[in-house]
Amino acid sequence: MDHTVLVVDDEENIVNIIEYNLKKEGYDVLKAYDGEEGLKLAVTKSPDLVILDIMMPKMDGYEVCRRLRATSDVPIIMLTARADEVDTVIGLEMGADDYVTKPFKTRELLARVKANLRRKNGHMESADKNASASTDTFKNISIDYDRYEVTKDGKSLNLTLREYELLSFLTKNKKQPFTREALLEKVWGYEYYGGDARSVDVTIRRLREKIEDDPSKPQYIITKRGIGYYFAG
Image (cartoon, rainbow, N blue to C red; front, side, top):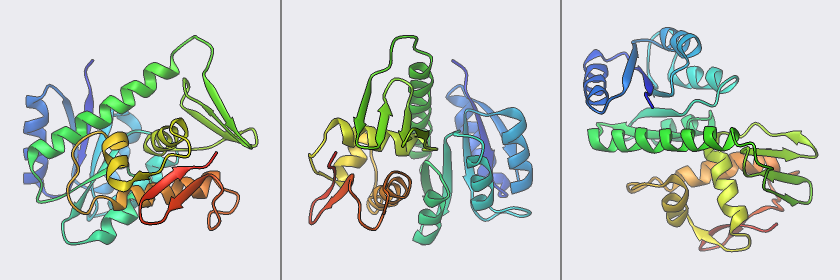
């Protein structure tokens, strides 16, 4: 299956390096050098994945991500400054699926592109199944594992694919606590580097805001002090 990756960055040399390596792996590549152009290409060309820088002219990566998330679940990998953790947290809260810090190693970026595309493909294949859905219901939350759909009080929740997969993993291992590192390994699915455990915290917070009646007093996703998180059911 051919995949198209949109690369949005105002540094032409970075775009060229990413394009060269993606094409070596067999991907088609779209390029944009500012946020407005990137958003337009994302909407009109419907790429399979977007690699998105934050600091760009005309429209920054946060706003591009926010607008894309309003209408699309396309996987988004943010490019962030190594020293600026704020970039990472804000990007994840805007709905980005992943991030890579600059300067990055090509093999790391390619690994994350492949992993996010595998997740998207698995989502599409499951959504196309004709068999009856496998579901779980926990009080007012229902999860359809075949259709990647979560509802609360009968209303569909707009989860990103990463949020869904984290919730799905926790519900399938109900009442078993997992460390952040274990969740990165089991859900994110490939090697993460030091400091990336905050990705789990941000995704947990976003999930709680969507599924909990009171996110400050969660009933479903519980923090196990000194360990990590578990789903109470």
